[in-house]
Each structure stands twice: as structure tokens, then as C-alpha cells.
Length: 467
Ligand code: ARG
Image 1: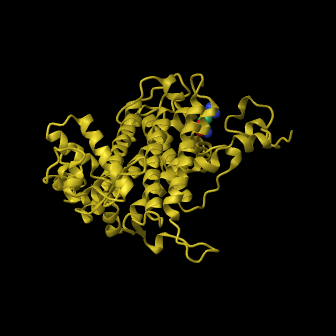
Image 2 (image 1 turned 45 degrees about the vertical axis):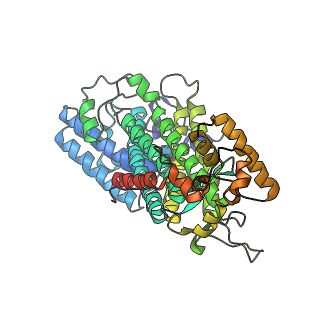
Image 3 (image 1 turned 135 degrees about the horizontal axis):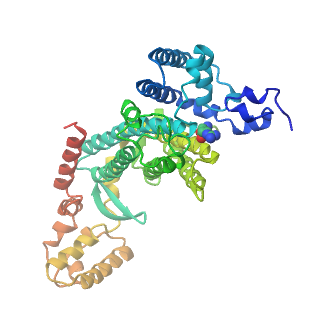
């Protein structure tokens, strides 16, 4: 085994060690290559902690000033890319603390009083996630806004609605867009809720049992914008529920994006030909000159696996883990970072993509003309004439079979042809067989009738403040 030449005391925690760490162990256990992302939160947490220690007589005001100024200077160096993170210092916490001690001496060595890296990393991670919740909420709002703008633009235009990917009933294009608005609105609520639950401060739980020093957890919590402090130090040092909840919220967002992406891929195929995605959002084929590929929705769909994978990693990580902190928990960061990067990039590009495509409204309207899509309307018509629904279903089924055999559509059948299937059918039937009439009859709450969809657009515009 290769050993580094540093003595045990070369480490911040090296007092009880007589030998240095193996280079292979340092390489395997370091997290600095990804947790450097937390530096701003680590510094904010340390500043709040130092101010609290000073207020409680653990640090003098001179020591506090030296620590605060030192941390600010380190932050500037990191911002400017001039700070050298060292792998032998393991993680962001040790790198910053060591740099502080090198810079200001003994006062720096007092900073870690009354805390542990276990509560420190939890503070950093929660502060990071809180910002990410806010950022993702903003991006969700941008996507929600795109749907509403597109919905308003296409109000009154029709398309086939599908079940089992078979033409089912005609709907407003706007209704389809607002279905996604609802999905992403629920995602927003989940993100708001996740932020609320995670916003309690772990700082001062120390290693896992709390601290015997005169610390004031409420003071640091309020300085860092937390709503309060966590209740149990043992729970806190081993808790990663908030990361799991965040990743599961990200997963649902990415699933919603993947469903939309799949529809855009289908709709831009020659088979559907419902949508034109602008050239700036597509790529060509290196061999087939005629191709224009919907890469962006395909990539968003493909990236779902990464986010689902992050959630799987996190839940597997915590399964069966004994209380309290275990080093396993260091592995909770990378999947979260990957989920954040993937979801934020996917939401941003989707918000843009929705303005870089147009629906081929003629093609979509034309597609509503075939497939006997007013069959349910005909059944409802019979129900209103007192025919029991099951019987009506059978009558219409026979009429549809007749259409299929003869290459006809329901609205084209003559009254004589229709009345073969039921004498109850009169000439007023054509009102319900007409596609527009069918759509606009669906005025039940949440339905696709024009009045309901207009109301829904207005309500969404109000929610978004774009009325
Ligand atoms: N880098 C560690 C993590 O991210 C910090 C906490 C380490 N604590 C410990 N007792 N080794 O989890």
C-alpha cells in the first residue's frame, strides 16, 4: 500500500494518528472535486457560526472580525478562480478552514468550536438545495408561462385527443397545452413544499449529540434564513430525507418533460405532421440529407434516466443505514448535483423550445375528421333521448362498424343510414356529429369546450400575473 509522507498531525484530524493516509485512500475518499460547489454556503454557515460564538463569549470580537474578514477574502479568491482546492484536505469544509487558519492563525483554529463537519455539511447542503428549489420554481414558472401563451395563441383550433394513442375525441389544442400547465403547476407546489420542509437548521447538532458549549442554534438559524432549528440532533446528522424529497420532485418534473418530449417527437414525425420545430432547434443527419431531427425533445426524454437514477441512488444509499452520520452520506451529493444540472437545463431549453415551434393547425383539424371521433357524442345524444347508455353504446358501435366497412365517417352518413341503427335518431343528430359542436358541448368542469378552455387560460394568466 502506498503511503504519503505526511505525518499523522499533517491532517486537521490527525492528532491520534501516527501514520499518514494512504494516497489511494485519499483519492477514494475525497469529495472536493464535487463539494467545492458548496463553498458559498460553507462560508455563509461559518460566518453565522462565528458571530454566534462571539455573541456567546466563545470568541472575542477581534477574533470574530479576523474570521469574518478571512472568510470573505477566501470567498473572493474562490470566486476569482485563484483558490487552490487540495485533495489531501478531503472536502470543501477542510479546505476553507485550513486556508483560514493559514491566513489568520489561532483565531481561525477556534472556528470549529461547537460544530462538526456532520452538521456543517448538512447546513451547506440544505442552503444549496434551498437555492435550487427557488431556481427550479422560477424555471417551472417560465415553462408554465410558455404553455399559457401557446394555449392562448391556438384558442379555437382543434386536434384529435388520444387514448391508447388512438384517436379518441376532438379537443382544443389549448386544452392539451393546459394539461401540461397543470402538471407543471403541481410540480411547482411540490417544490415549494420541499423547500418548506427542508428549511430547518441543522447547525449546532454537532457530531450527533449536540454541544456542551454555550451555543445558540436559533441565532445561527435566523442569520441563515432558516425557519427554525431541527428538533433532534441524532436525526439531523443522519438525515437526507430532504435530498430524497428534492430528487423525487425533480424526477416527477423530468417525467413530465419526457412525456411532452415524446409527444413533440411523435408530432414532428411525417406520420403525424402536427408540429414544425424551427431549424434552430433541430439537427440534420450526417448521411441522409433530407432529415431534420427533433434532438432537443429526444435528449430531454433521454435525460430522464439520469434523474430517475439519482433518486434510485439516494434511496438505496439511505436504506438500512444505522443512525447517525455514516460516511456513506457523502455519496448523497453527486446524484443531487446531477439531478439539478439535468432538470434545470431541461426546463430552460423546454421553455425556449415552446416558442420555437408552431402547430400545423390545418393538419391537426384535418386529423379530427377521421376516426369516428364523435361516436361518444352520438351515444350521449341517444342517452338524452332516454336510451340506456349501454344500449346506446351498442347502437353506435354498429354504426362505427358500418363506417369502417364502407370507408365512411359518422357525420357523412345520411339520416336513412343512421336510423337503421336506431329509430330514435332524428335529423337534429347532425349538430352533435359535427366536430366543432362535439368539442363545444363538453362544458363540464375541466372539459374541452371553448368556454371552459377560455376560462382556464384566463385563470392561468391570472395565476402567472400575465393577464
Ligand atoms: N465530506 C463529508 C460529507 O460530505 C463531511 C462530513 C464528514 N464527517 C466525518 N465524520 N467524516 O459527508
